Amino acid sequence: MASFDRTKCRVLNGPEATGQHCPEGWTLYPTPGPQMKGVTDPGSGDFHYYNWVDQFNTLGLGENIPIANGSGSDSLLALRPDTGEWVVLRIPYPLGFFSRGLDGRIDDPNAGWKGRGLWANYGGNFNWHIEGGKGTPSKMVHFQLRPHPLAD
Image (cartoon, rainbow, N blue to C red; front, side):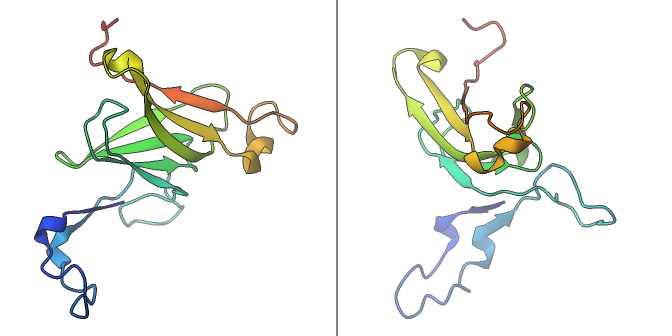
């Protein structure tokens, strides 16, 4: 996954913007996850179908946190750009979380972590991989993070 710092770019648009003016503006972060057999380069063999940015802190990790769907690892991968650390969110049951859609919602801004969350779906094209097999309906998953384990 890449993170982009627009403040480090010199030319953003117009005929002078060739795309080569911002080499110091990009940082590449190898994603965690399964690796292909025999590959020694850092990174993962995961399939990131969809990337999304949590602009409004709907998950609780902060504003402008990039999140990738880890379709090959049954996960959502949230990058903390300030530390370079990945937060890996997994669905333990049923098996086969192959997310294709992602969005955040703030239903009640005054309710703290209980009034916000991240929603992801099990895409309809991989339902035969979900525990239960063919005929298993699509599902929506609601992710919420408590600020600390004892928060109510």
